[in-house]
Length: 294
Image (cartoon, rainbow, N blue to C red):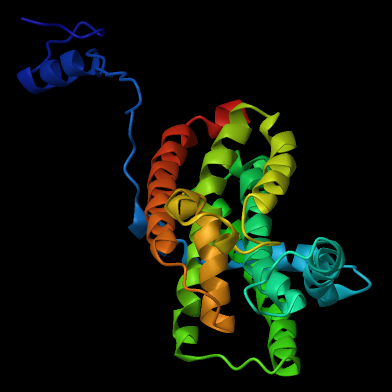
């Protein structure tokens, strides 16, 4: 027989409720999983947020600027002039039978798309720390939006390339149908490398200082100021380990009709796929620590 606190006899039902309320729930604390699955469906559900993040980056870039969208043209145009002066006229670097100004400018467009997306995506997590620690949303939204926002600059600068092709009398062939493939490849390369660097930048802040140096070295390791045909044939496949080599040579081939990238593009495709896949899983692995570390 069981009595309550007031001394009255308790029924079996009351006795069960009283005894069960004294039982504390069991909580199992487990270490985080080593590999966290990627929820693409969740990213699709937040597609409007992706749009607003991308649009915000575009507006911030050109807000209160004197030249506005002209900055999208100035950077590749001035680099083209410098490369033409020093590498085309003084160093006499060959350009596969294409006038050197348009040869270098056609390479600078995908390169600028890649480098801008890489710079923004690698630092986006740290720069948006105030949002990251207050509101939940798929963290992959940030590097994706950072990679997409430079595409506006690319489209504006592409108009100059079209005018240059008209000036030099270059007519694109059927190979221009492959152009979207190389644009996507540049975006995915920027996205994959940006995933690795953004996650590392949260944990090791000195990575942000190595990114400009990395981009500068990568520029001259890619066939921007010189054609890949200068390399011996036996090194062509090895050169394709640099994914931007396949992107740039493929971009020139699709628009200007230069030498096809052959096996180089296949190697670049494999490397980009590896970078993106491993970057996604590493980013998801480190994502659970962002709010604590940042």
